[in-house]
Image (tube, rainbow, N blue to C red):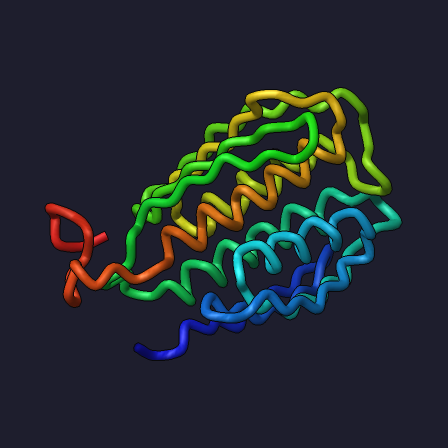
Length: 197
């Protein structure tokens, strides 16, 4: 199997982003977005998905956090899609139900090539740290569409907004790791009756 590593750069008038993602890593992360809580979430994503992630983001934080977080989602989705490649031999589907103290979040996804986001988190404060909570949905929307995946995130219980968001990022990581894992029974085939994704 070849290395599943992607390098993606994206520069606009609002952000300048460089990312390297290794789907077959060990969970090493070097992340700097300028938003401490967002860095924490992305490092948790890398650690719990066993992905190596090197990510540097320079965004217009003097405006607000919107462009930085949304554009990071776009770049991460592109990196996932690029690293997965032709999808031969992988599970394609992944799901994980993650508990974090009083919180329980479910994530299920399909690397189908057809983007869709179903998002159901009940966040009750405007910010956690310097990250606007409304940007959690925008991040996952950007990842799902630029990564061409069907992504469902559902909160089953929880009150603490930090726990809810962190559980969502970790559940996403574990579900993605499952979807990207090779299944020997596929023997070089794609898991689709169409023969392609």
